[in-house]
Image (tube, rainbow, N blue to C red):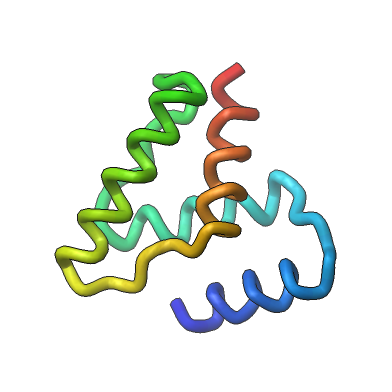
Length: 84
């Protein structure tokens, strides 16, 4: 988990724009730590934003490291790109 966070921070801080492959891996790594992956096409952009906010709250209640803003945007962008 720490490796993923480190890679995320290094990638974002270096100005490299993450592609869908990186966003997909981040989505898979962070979300499967608690549950099975949902199908991206099941919700629209607004709904995914609400789901991500809800997951942030749940992670905090479980004393897990929540997603940072960059991770939220990457995962949201990936989910939206796959839901169209």
